[in-house]
Length: 126
Image 1: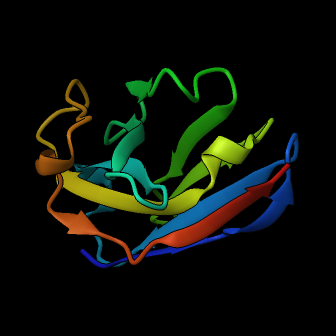
Image 2: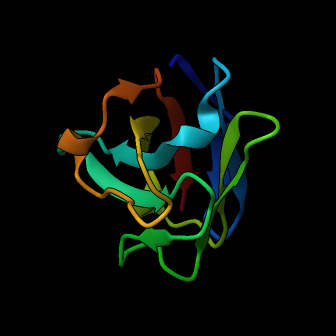
Image 3: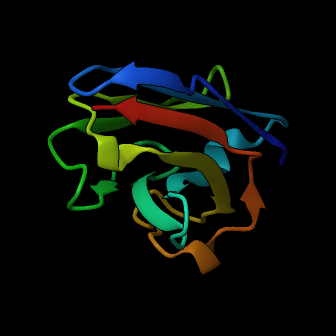
């Protein structure tokens, strides 16, 4: 699976952005998809995950209520809608994929993921 993230940019605090991650291949619906981010000088951290059919979703506490993950399996794409952005959301955002045998499973650890996109930079100015 090859992943291509896009949609990053510069936005003022309180604004919104929508990230997209397009996946290659015909088996996108067999993968749980996650978003992670890495701020300058910090380790990469979990942001959100969606199970293969979208039945299970989870978020980091820091983004709950502001970010929404979704997917369109017909378009092989996962999205991250980011609202009420804060300067502390500034980071390179990565999408990731891991094969999943059931919609019941979803993964929040970086080590669970086998495939990673190249990252897209989100900068939130104060």
